Image 1: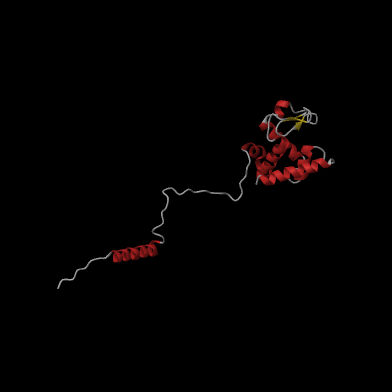
Image 2: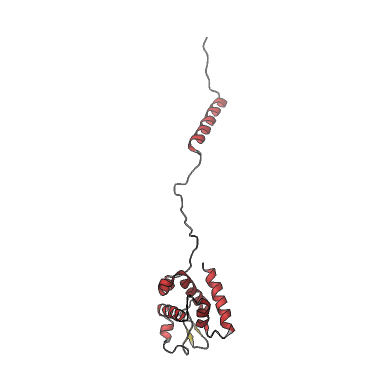
Length: 163
């Protein structure tokens, strides 16, 4: 008597299913399809949104200075080097008030590198970074004027939003 060993479709499916289960157990997830290119996105803990211009001007004063400098420029002129304000007496991205600083020319006030360097020097001679509030208020005018405190609060808000 001859025995016919036919593999029925159900038995074949069962054998394949067992093979898949064994592969998954051995390999982790053998059926997972991985893309040929896996994008690697590295997101730093803090992302500084600051131009090289400000970092160069601040030097060893570091990131907070660069952020504050950018915040002042945003508050003063929206970072517009050609901005003219205060009835035609303040110029550049930092709105340097020429009557208060007669040693500065319009061209210097509108030059991004010169005005950034000058503003950092002005802030530091007014106690920055140890006396940050005072120095930023002095950039806007007299600390006796309450408007300069409101100015500082706005610069500080912008600065925090850039971190």
